[in-house]
Length: 112
Image 1 (cartoon, rainbow, N blue to C red):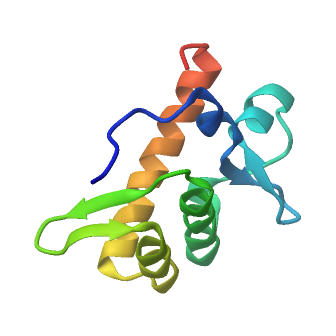
Image 2 (cartoon, helix red, strand yellow; image 1 turned 180 degrees about the horizontal axis):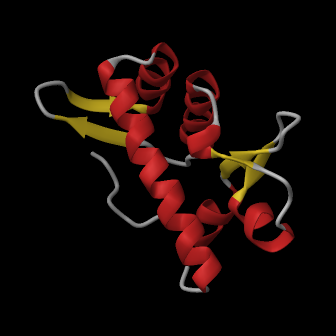
């Protein structure tokens, strides 16, 4: 059964949200505290967006998502869907893009 407990504080800060121009992932902490030159999520190629979301899922301590008509999807299956950019994978990418945008906004406002 999926654990519905909120992510820990460190999970938000340590997981990648952007990329440097030379291809290194940047954590939320690095984006907010160091302000390095970055390529934001929405400017990444579709392939890099898939890689970023797959890495965020990979770094999640627990990851289970319910898909109507499909059941519960585990971390391995979700990463596979994202990497193949299936309709489910694209939906997961969209959800993560919104999450990243919200996390950065709240972190910059000091409300995270």
